[in-house]
Length: 393
View 1 (cartoon, rainbow, N blue to C red):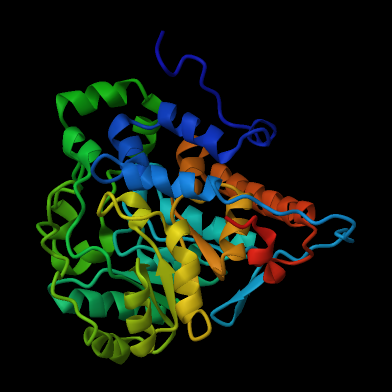
View 2 (cartoon, rainbow, N blue to C red; view 1 turned 180 degrees about the vertical axis):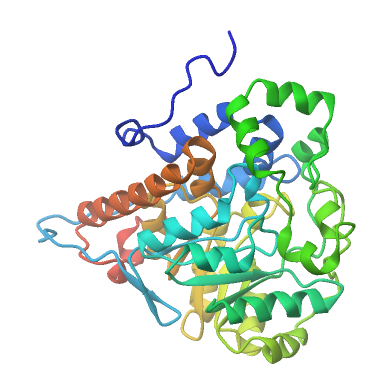
C-alpha cells in the first residue's frame, strides 16, 4: 500500500499526544530518506550522538517534597535578555529540505515561545526574510569563509536586520564523515537521481511542497559567492572548500571589527579552550560536539559541562547542546550549571512531521515538561536549579 494512503493534515488534538520522539518517528515516514538522514544522522558510527542522549539519561534527579510549587518561574536571563524558557532554537543548516521557508517558521515559533532563534550561515531563508517573520530576538551563526568578504557581508546584513548575538561555530574546520549523507549522495542544490525520484514518489506531499516553492539553496552565501560556491558543495564531502580551516584565536579581533554585540563561541569541548575563550573576551560559549556530527568518539556534552562551568562559569555564560529532547533534559543541563540549552534536532523533528504547527507543539511541550519537572523537584524557578537537584555519583 502506498505510504501516503492514510495521510491527513495533523490536527492540534493529534499533536497534543505527541512527544519529540513520536514526532521523530512521524518525520521519518514523511520525509524522503536523504532529508531524514541529514536531520537524524551523525558522524562515523554515530557513537557520540547516541552518547549525548545516554549521558543525559544517566543523570538522576533528587526531588524534594512539601514545597509550595503552585507557581514556578521557568524564565532565565541569557546575555542580558529574559527568556520564557531556558533554551534557544539553535542554528541548523539546509532546513528547507524539511519544509519550505523553514527558518522563517522556526523563527516565528521561537518568538511565540519567548526564546531566541539562531539562524545558520547555511540557512535556506534569507536573513531579511527571517527578520520579517519574527518579532523576537534573533542570533546569527557564522562559519568563517575563505573569502572573508562573504562573512563580513553576512554580519553586516544580520546587524542591519537587528540580530543581537553572533554565534561563531568553531568546530568545523572541515565537515565530519557523515556516512548516511555519503550513501545518499546528498548535495545542495539537490541532484535528481533515479533513487531520489523513487524515494520522493512515495512522499507526494513533500514533493508537492518542493515543486510549489522550488528546490532549497543556501541563499545567504550564494547571493555573493555564486552558484558554483558553497551552495553546490557536497554536504558529505571530507571538506567544504568555502569554510576557512585556518581560523585561530587572534581572528576574534577581526570579528570584533564587524560585530559590536555579544559574541558566543559554539563548539567548545574542553576546559582549556573554554579558558582561552574567556581570555579572548567572548561573551558566552556553547559546550557542543555539533550533535555528534563532527568527530565521532568525543565525550557527550553532559559529561563535559560541569567541569567547564566550574572553570569559567563565573566569567562568561555557558550554554550547551547535544541530545536535548525533553523539558527534563533542559532541567538537567541547568542543574549542571548551564545558563540555557540550544535545541537542534527537536524542533526539526516537529517541522518534518507536521510543518510549522509541529515546531510550535515542540516548544509548548518543552515548556510544559520543564515546568512539571520544576514542580516535581520541589523547585520554584529555573534560576534556582543546581547540583543539589541531582543524585551524586
